[in-house]
Each structure stands twice: as structure tokens, then as C-alpha cells.
Length: 328
Image 1 (cartoon, rainbow, N blue to C red):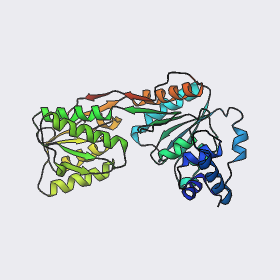
Image 2 (image 1 turned 180 degrees about the horizontal axis):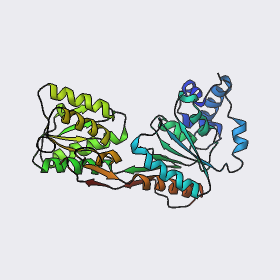
Image 3 (image 1 turned 30 degrees about the vertical axis):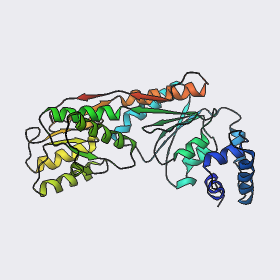
Image 4 (image 1 turned 90 degrees about the vertical axis):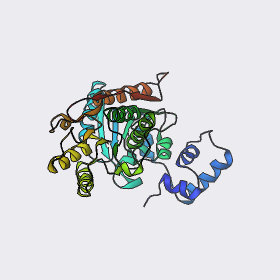
């Protein structure tokens, strides 16, 4: 198996970006470090992809979009915005899911610079890897995560503010105990929404209770099962802030099956405003953000970077807003 840049970094005990700097003769590292890394690369018989370097001598005419798996409901509108704007600019869009670890096709597209720019919808690429491949010739836009580095631009939604507002509204409606159904621990969105939830408790001098944090995984089915467990234990939450709408739909299903009336006995607010949220019974109150516009903005920022325009914001935060329906 051909050695990778990660293998060199591991053997040399340096970051991936340091290996990249050494191979590309960057002045960001010392001569001593460069020589050490190059010796390790030679020892491992590592070499950069020469075909890819020849390919990058001209504009490829394609943008890459990279994601963990095929998109759920939250991403459909966002990808539509990306697709339309990329095609308006006369470029092709290459979609690539992340399977196969550091040897995946997605990693090769970035390492070998087989595209003109990239939009990242995944946390599977670690920060060091993105920093090592991002350049003037290959700018990167990362969505829903913060990666602070030159040639990497972050487009975020106001997760904290949306969660703060949702929790604040539940408490203001008379509920002193608000459960939080959370997503995976490694999710940037989930972490910021948890912080907003905790901040709203503090705003009302409500003591944080870890027992009210329900660990879930952003899926409807898992939230349904977790809600059933709570109900079977003889407890009926008075209010729930769900970190996304899919989990909220599972909560509603479990409550309906158990005869719990919403919003009379249980008040609920979700996050994301997916299409199903207004079609469920009762219709779900939620936090909305402009998903299609986020996709368009990602492409606009990427093309500004590709065209070397100055004054590009490294971080863009898009607003959120509460949509009141029938569950509060």
C-alpha cells in the first residue's frame, strides 16, 4: 500500500500540515524540521501524486462537496442551493461521501488537488488534514464547524442563539424543568445548541440538571425509543427542547402513542424546520435557518476565494428564528 501523508506525519511525529510545508518547501517551518520530515518521507518511499500536480497546472472546472453519508432532510435544501449556484458559475459539482478512511476517494480528491475548491459537510476530515490541503489554489469552505486557518472559510448558523431562544421560550411559558434531547457528542451543532440551552437556564436562574440531558443521535427512531423509556418509568416531561426536528418527530410519536397531550401536558420545540415539522400532528414549533441560502453563500465565499478577492470574512454566522406552531 502506498504510504500517505498521514503515515509520514506519524513516523516523523509532526502534524500533517508540517509534512505538507516540508514537501512544498514552505518557509513556515525551520530547515531542521524540513530535513527531518524529508528524510522520513524518503525512508517510507512517500511521494506526492505527480499526475495531480500536472492536472493542477490548469483550471479543472469542478467544485467538490464532501459529506459523511447521503443527505438527510436537513441537507436537501442546502445542497440545492450549492448545486444551483455552482452551475450558474459554469462549474461542475462533484459529490463525494467519506468512506475508506485516509485512503478514501474524498481524501485523494483533496490531497491531489483534483478540484478547484471544496465545500466540507463533514467532521470526518480532521483539522490538520484540511489545513494541510487548503491553499490559494484549493480554498475550502467548511459548514457547521470551525477550522481556523488560512484559505479555510467557515459558514455557521447561530446554533447558540437559536437554542437560547427556544429554551427561553419554554421556560417563559411556565416550565421550570426543560429536558434537552441532544445529538452526538462530536457534533459541532449539538455542542453549540447545548451551550445555548444552558445559557438560557442561567438567564432564568434555573439550576442545570444533568438528569434532564437525554443522550440521543439526531435520529427519529432513537429519540422515540428514549422518550418511550422515560414515559415507561412513569415520568412525563413538561417541556423538551430537541436539538433537531427529526428527534422531535420521534418524541411526538411516543407522546401520541402514550396519550400525552401536546402542548397541554408537554411543550416541545425542535431545531432546523424540516418540511415534516409542519406536517406532523400537532405541527412542530421549531428554530428555522435559511438552508438554501446557506448553500448559496458557501459557493459565493468559495468563488471569492478562488478569484483571490480581498476582504473575505473567515467566519460567517447566519441568523436563526423561532417558528411558532402547535407544540408550544
